[in-house]
Amino acid sequence: MSQKVDPAAVINQVYGKYAAAGHRYHSELPPELAPWYCYMPDSGHNVVVLLASDYQERAGAPASALDGRTVPAPVRAVLRAGWTVSPEGFIVCDLPYDPILGLTTDPADDEFAGSQPAPEQLHVLAVGHLYHPNKKSWPETTQVTLSEQGVEILLFLKRPNDREINDVRTGVANFLLMAADEVLLLGWQLGASLWQDGTWEAARQTNRTAGLPETGTAGGVSVRIVLVDAATGLVEAIRLTPWTPAFTAEVRQAIARQLRTGGNPSKAQSTCQKWYYTYPDTASMVDSPAAIVMNR
Image 1: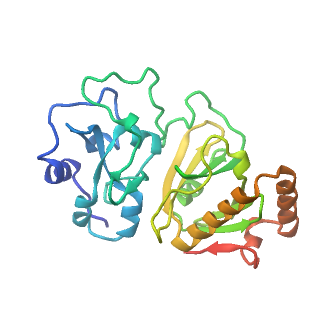
Image 2: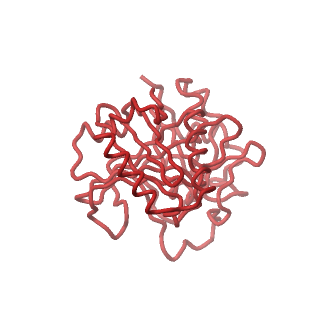
Image 3: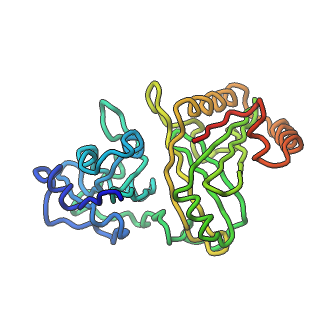
């Protein structure tokens, strides 16, 4: 069993001489984040987190060895990015980090005592909350986002059962990639669940810059997987899981290939139809010589 950490003790030990007492956030924080809140005079309202990439590199290390790896991150940045709670009790969040500059969140996320909250409160992505504040039902589908801001797989499933929820939360994650000039297919298997997939075209992703986050010379990116009950709109599971550096490099090359050739919706549709005709389900793609597979 993992050793549980005491948030107050970690904050006092690592940030005691920097943190300012007597401050509270202007809005109620989710119960998981509230114990990790602290106020820094030079950066304002923060939540102390472990970066996802850092935590994954040190998986299995004792909790005492992770205390000093935590970083204070702006509350708004954490709420926007989403988070998971590690077995040790740390808040794990996928935020941009530069080895020289440190945490590189949007300066607009910094909030200080006395500042007014934004007129529209930032929507919280958390288990038990609506995925979208104004929407309570969704069609059953999957959605893949590959952007410089992060990688996300959205799963909309009507009334997922306990096994399906637990597979998303903790099941072994395997991935596969099929790539062409105008489209790519990303497949995944979580725990005992069946293989699933989603297609992605750079030309159709207009809300975020196509790409992957920078990871250094040989790093792998973290993937955020969100399971939403399509019947209620409620988030049932959120998970961060890493891609290997090799698989990350393959996806990065596939994205660059699309960006070089430009979009062609009709060719993309034709390619997808060929894939689905050749392979009756995603599992059958695993043995294809054209597939790049990442198995745990």
